[in-house]
Amino acid sequence: MKLLERLIEVGALKFGDFILSSGKKSNVYVDIKIAITYPDILEMISDRIVDILKRYEFDKIACIELGGVPIATAVSLKTKKPLVIFRKEQKSYGVGGDMIGEIKKGERVAIVEDVITTGKSALSVAERVKRKGGVVATIVAVVDREESGLEFESVLKLSDLIKAKDFFNSAKS
Image 1 (cartoon, rainbow, N blue to C red):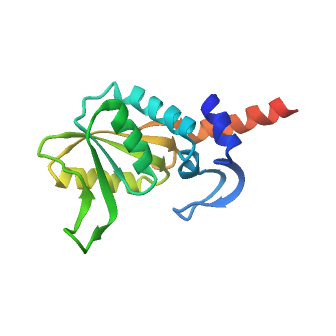
Image 2: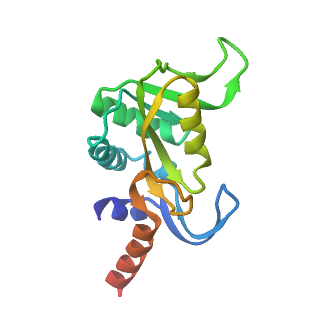
Image 3: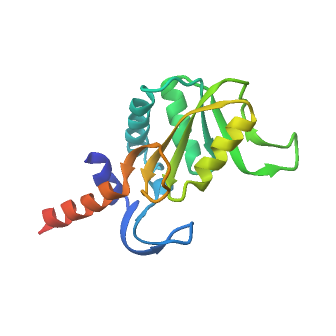
């Protein structure tokens, strides 16, 4: 419950009328990018992801820029596993490429995401891991908005966030 309290305290969890990046409407908005700018919240999140990852065998951690990078970096530091960062778009300058880091054939990769709504971003990373010869060990999101229909792990679900709203509202009464 401490994580939910902190999300509310820092304004990362909001209730109202919002349009998500997917274009969908929602009455709950969670801004993990803001939340992870607070070291204690980033630590709580990365600790929970590390606990989830203990159930899987993996060689590397992967994420897509921007939201997943601080989370995946914190998890990498805690697990001592190398990190791969996928770019949203192919870089056309320097050495080019669509990722930072490397994936060798057969390496098992744990994908870390901030929020999964449609799953499009997570699926993009999974496909790119496979194209590089890697195997997706698991996908872990901080928040599962429970709309994608995909199977993956998460620290929090949208239903948890809604319960938190009800809990904190009743505690104020």
